[in-house]
Each structure stands twice: as C-alpha cells, then as structure tokens.
Length: 182
Image: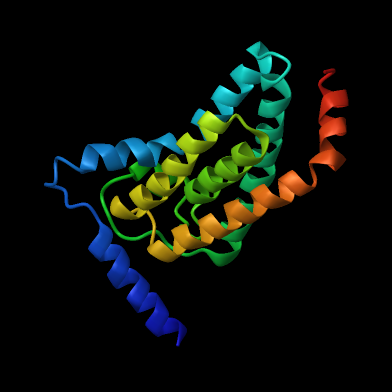
C-alpha cells in the first residue's frame, strides 16, 4: 500500500513541475520558493528585534523562537526519514546542503509564520501570509525540490506548531521578555 502511495505521490508531483521552457511561470515559482528560505526570515526577524518598537520586538522574538524550535524538529525528522529529493536540476543549493525532502521545511516555516501572525497580528500581514504560504509550498513542488507529500506534511507540521506556540505563549513569552530585557 505504501509503495502505491509513493508512486502516486511521484506521479502527481511530476505533473505539477514547471517545465524548464515555461518562462512565464518559472520566475514566479523561483521567487516564491526562495522567499521561504530560513536565512532570509531569520535575518529579517533579527533586524526587527533590534530596530523594532514595543509591538515589533516581542513579536519578532516569538517568531524567531518558534522558527528555531520548528527547524530543530523538521531537521530531526529529515535525518530520521532520509527521503531523497526528486531528481532535478533546479535548487542545487538545497540538494547540496539538505538532500532530504520529507517534510518540507519551507512549507512548515511558511505555515508556522502564517498561523502565528494570524494569532499575533497585524491583520494586514496575516492576509499577506495567508496568500503567500500556499504559494511557497506549491512552488517547492513546481520546481522539483519536493514531492507533494513533503509539502503536505510540512503544512500540517507548521500549522500544528503555530497553534501550539500560540497556546503556549503565556508560558514562554515572559521568559523571552526577561531574557532579552524588554
């Protein structure tokens, strides 16, 4: 049964891939695929934590803390499961630095941020992330660095982590506030 599911997953994932000669869609897929990179988000959130006001500093620390916990969890799963990425040419940096595809860290991160911002605000950013998160996830399959099941697992993990982090906010937010002197 698992073999049949994996074969079907590969077939669906292959059908969603952007062809190399599709010059109209591929640049958008590349943009969204890279927009979920962890270094990009971590650098931006650290900058907000340094320069932000009374709303943005604690907000960014919550996202940074959640991002780190999620990254450790996703990396642990990847090293445990060790599913190889789909064959392909695009995304050599991902293939070299992280050859494992299950679950998708980009999808998990995008949905984590979406859920956290829906819970923390601001509303305008929540709406943007509500549109952005699925596009990041789909782009990863379209460019052939993930199977559809990798992304679905990432969506479930990121959404679940986001909800858990919001529920646990009263437990860890005072600790973060004291640690960073806010």
